[in-house]
Length: 284
Ligand code: RET
Image (cartoon, rainbow, N blue to C red; front, side, top):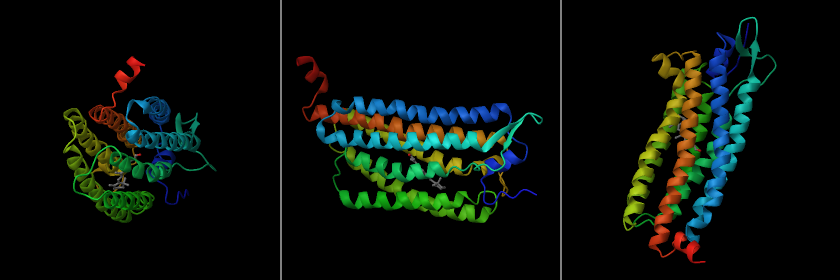
C-alpha cells in the first residue's frame, strides 16, 4: 500500500499510470526553458541599465534581483522534477521513484515570495503617483503579496487529499490577489496622468499584461480541477504538463516581458526629462 502523504497530484500520476516519454520530457524541457530565459534576461536588464536616467535605474536593479532568484529557484524546481521520477523500462513509463524527494511546486512559491514584492515595487520607481501615498501602496503590496502566496502555498499541499482545504486556502489567497489588482489599477491610472504619450501607451500594455499573466497562476493552481471539472482532481498527465507550461508562460510574462515594458516606459520618461541615451552615445 502506497502512502504519499499530502503529495500534489503530479506524484499521484507518477505512482498511478506513470508519465509517457512525451509528457515527462515536455515537462523537463519546459522547466529548463524557464530558468534559461531568466539567465538570458538577466543580461538584458544589466546591459540596458544605462539607457534610462539614474532615478529609474532601481527598476532595472529590481529586475536583476528577480532574475537571479528566479534562475536559482527554477533550476532547483527543474531538478526536483527529474529527481522525483525514474524510467521503468518494463512498463515503458516514468514512475515516482522510491526513497526520493516527491515533486512539489513549493520552490516556485518561495520564488514568488521574493519576486512578487519586487515586481510590485518596481513600477513604483517608474511612475509618479498623483493622489495615493507611496508608503501606503507599498505596504499594501507587501502585505497582500506575501499573504496571497503563503495561503496558496499551504493550500497546494491539499490538492489531492483534502479538496475542501485546498479551495478554502485558495479562496483566501484570491481575496489578497483582488486587493493587489485594485492597488495596481490605481498605480497605473495615476501613473499615466502626466506621463508622455508613448509612456502612457506602454503603461496601458503593462496593465493588460499584468492581468493576463498574474491570472495564469491561480489557473495553474486549479489545473487538476480544470481538467476534471468536478470535485475530484484529474490524475492526468496532460494536466501535469499543462501546469508546467502555464507556470512557465506566466513567469516569462510577469517577470521578463513586464520588466522589458517597464524599461521601455522608463526610457520614454527619461527622454521627456531630457536624458536621451541615443544622443548621449552619438555625441560622445
Ligand atoms: C495562488 C493560490 C490560488 C489563488 C491565487 C494564487 C495567486 C498567485 C499569483 C502569483 C503570482 C506570482 C508571480 C510571480 C512572479 O515571480 C497563490 C496560486 C490567486 C497571482 C507574479
